[in-house]
Image (cartoon, rainbow, N blue to C red; front, side, top):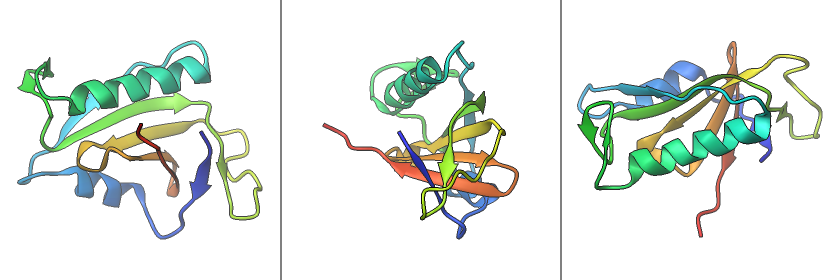
Length: 119
């Protein structure tokens, strides 16, 4: 999964975009020992929170106004030329459940995005 720099976005816009009816539910996912395990756990949480029929954070799924978040993940954001933007900085992953096909990687005001392919 490769994150591409999107200099049209800031982290606050992603959070605001996740809100439904002025409600924001942040679902924090704990980081795992490796980046691969962390990404897998994050994607599993996005899937669970968006699938009808379970309860997450005391709310039935899909979670309206949900924002899945994982901090301190070793993921790389690259610019359009393929150069690494976040030198040695770990990122925060975000996914607004109302747009679960797009995963964001953020550090400071730098945002990268990847659109996932659902099968």
